[in-house]
Length: 127
Image 1 (cartoon, rainbow, N blue to C red):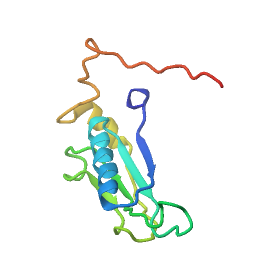
Image 2 (image 1 turned 135 degrees about the horizontal axis):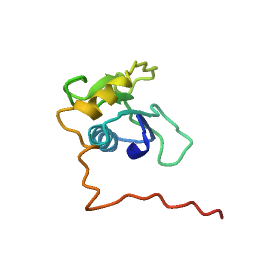
Image 3 (image 1 turned 30 degrees about the horizontal axis):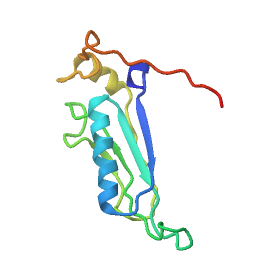
Image 4 (image 1 turned 90 degrees about the horizontal axis):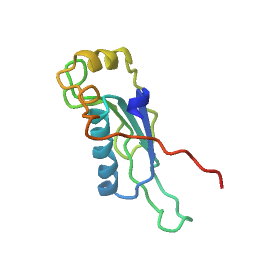
């Protein structure tokens, strides 16, 4: 998707423990760095007592950035209070991504070795 111009990747999730949440979070942060894009994650919190195996959930919404000069050093633009019902609002400057792609200290997208591998999208087949 980054090769097709994706600038923001949205990752909705449903996790029941902090361990599961951390798997989602750290993978999302890696995608922001690898694909030089913003990544927004959000999940459910609270209880669903009448749903089997989902009687409790853990979540923390956040917006991640690439880790480069124009962005926060830790790659976190904004994050909500852990496991608290709230709305997270973050302004992102998409023009910073263009600057990163052209002049970043590490240019993952530009430096990909397409002479060694190629990514192609498969056509969807209707059922």
